[in-house]
Image (cartoon, rainbow, N blue to C red; front, side, top):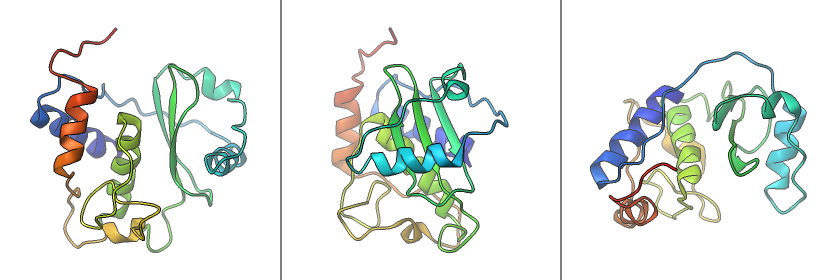
Amino acid sequence: MTEDAVDFWNRRLSEVGTPFRFGPVTRRIQMISVDYLEELSQSLGGGQKPPTPQPIADIPEDIIVALSDGDFVSFSSRLDPEKKLVGIRDCSDAPLNLNNVQRNLIAHELGHLLGLGHNNDPTKLMCGRPATCRPGDYHCEIDEFFPLTSWEKAHLLRLYPASWAPE
């Protein structure tokens, strides 16, 4: 589902006219401490961010998506100027195990890495707190990604204009 979410974003980014794209997905099985993911998730509510463990710092990719069996609020976080981490909590129980939820949850967190915040429209991908939207709202019987708002599309183009080029 992470690959599907990356493909979703690369299509949306192309549609809005920005050259920015997520690079290829590299799969690796590597243990990331559940305690670290829980502590980092909690810190995003205003606490002090824990130091990045060396095994994570040693991962060469810029963006890490950690699919965990932990019990925390899924999140996206910048660990340092070059490395970002998306933590996806245990999706084995409802509502996270319902059809279509996990794919949209991963895409939602990747949207934060792109620079998008929350909106309050439960029919859109980036709906979230303080609105009453929760991951279970992504449930539907067909596999689909929820859409972006017009403002979010325009904002992506402001963040990554047609003249954008990697450094």
